[in-house]
Image (cartoon, rainbow, N blue to C red):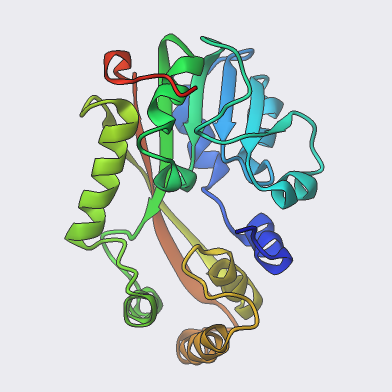
Length: 252
């Protein structure tokens, strides 16, 4: 189902992994170079893609949502998905994806991701998780998501689910995981609401469930805001390695 325009605008404005941390990691740890060939799968409106191109990488975006592609205003973002990447074999030095990797088809995507990578090319996923220490607002926000949507990013079951997905996409337990550090922002009400609306667990626009969730979220904001802002902190994580090609059958 296509995302609503409200969700698309919220995503393009408020959502996304911190590009500064991501770029620093790619350059420092994985030796991303100018003219490196990079495919950003599920690139959204191209927030990270812009940074890659500004650095000098030959970066191509792949995005299944037509609304995202239109909102980007960029060239070089192609219709496609992790299961069908519109590039030739062995094209890329890096194939990267942010939290979109969690929705990749674990049967069809692995072979396609490996197909477009050169021998020795890196597959890299970026994720956002709860930090080790949560502020008063973040504790309340986590409890709100758990109660309202059964969403527990730090539960043992969710951690196992994410690990299993990575194992399938890499073709085995052949990857590394590294914390890139905590990212803290101070959000106004509009910014907090925008982040919530951009999340995959947010109820459909116009639904009674969304109306009730917004009322609860507004109450949380009112209790914890200081000078009109709340502290919002997440931890950025990189999952990276060379995929095991022998474990993959290329998608047709």
